Length: 137
Image 1 (cartoon, rainbow, N blue to C red):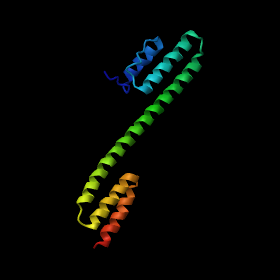
Image 2 (cartoon, rainbow, N blue to C red):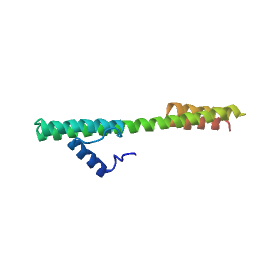
Image 3 (spheres, rainbow, N blue to C red):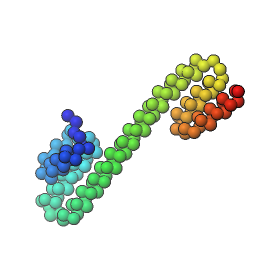
Image 4 (cartoon, rainbow, N blue to C red):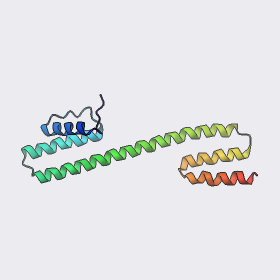
């Protein structure tokens, strides 16, 4: 069962469970596991060890900020990896097209598109494409 951490009601329940010391950490993804584990420890310090309310609130905000940064970083990495994989697939297709090509302009065009996929510089292909096809006319 997947836990919807985007749902504010689910988040509130998990925070309450952390306060009560009953939060089940095992099914949570790593960033949430860390957040709720540390939040439970923070709440124990607040409830049983005399931590000041202001200090507890400050630390909770800090923990949430760290959690949000981790999730954002993971999202960015996931997007980058997906884009990288798509570029690899497209480059493989271009390689096949280059092998089948019969004229130098098509080969150059497909090679420049592959270089663009490898470097991520989108304007490179457009500049080279103009050169390739303008010279051939």
